[in-house]
Image (cartoon, rainbow over all chains, first blue to last red; front, top):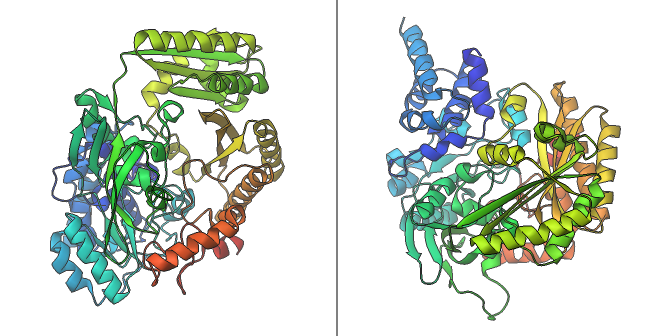
Length: 95
Length: 488
């Protein structure tokens, strides 16, 4: 599964891993859950959202999603994949 | 329509003063994430970068009831429509912004307030994750008995607002049977409190004005629920039946014999085949059923034995336990991502009908589905059963095709299903609720009753600010109308 297919799969997944978002996190924000991050990432990859400062900031908020890694029923590391995408796009934008 | 950033609303600074800059969202990517819920139509749109309806104007994440009240006061003063948001797991579009509503995310209000083991109750804030709530209870030897497939992707407040059901509802009831009392903020900011007591005779149920209102009448902030000690014993039974009729008859008689299975699942042939292959389903007995009895060891065993007498009288035979174990291992997972991510048009529709109507209802819908699109995947199971009838839970799946044609067929599948349900005396939803997608058929089902609900809505929310246009209530002028979209 390539990066885009992974993001599309996770964006379509109803987020069962979100149970591991710690209740104590100060931010309990939907757009920081794994499936929502994947939805944002997919839109950026497909050109439906611009990769600008807002997108870079949204894709950098992966603390909650990292906490969910062990709970993914399919064994994916979405937070890690989003971090990689964001780093690559950020480097490309700076170049 | 693609997501495009618009000017920030004039009241954003004041909202930010209430919930704080870190808890007030307005960037385009963040709003995009709140522009969908798990309505399959929304998935068909967002997977290709299209808005299902509109972007929200902003998102507020209040820390507590006081902040929520101040957000509501701002909403009232500035005439800002709003939508309370739990975990967005609804599948009828209940949290879709139709008119740039302000989304109020309640997940920071996520604490258990009190477990009362003498009364057998727990009081919890509405934004708590369902899986975390149940785990908290389990650690103390209790369960709330509400275990939906969406357990981990939903909030306790969402269960009540949408009048949901868990997979053990046959024993423990739907959420309206489990909620004893609640607190909610009304559209004018007043608090409504319903005392948590076992039963009352103080007029029509105010609790039920909120349970199932999907946020249109108020925002639930706190709930008191029944809890039960974790069962000492569980006895599972996997069964095969020769015909669907004998399977349904056996379930009906088990319920009418006043037995209380925790889990009851009967599958049609399409759903039985993949689940029962390992235990020989299809060889003369193509209909699979799973039962679970729980409680004290003696009572659970007795109820199982009495149920098995009924099963045997209907020609049912006991099979190996593998289908039950597989179901237990995957009961909180969804099969949908593998299909939705590959451009299939998948959806589920659940209705309730009397026992007398269920065989004809299933046969008619299955026949009409195949006429609509030969080769459509259509499977059914009955998993919430009562002495008087059962929930018929149907899964449909259309292959990848041009989106306009997929949407047309998807809409037609919904129409034939709910039309058959209404024709045969059923109700159009057992537990998924109405949201925005069921509006046309709810009007037909409720008739005069909908005028009563609209009257209540107009009294409570004269500016139509809370979740407008959902639950078949009046939409705001200029809001997106999904019924028009489907007919284009």
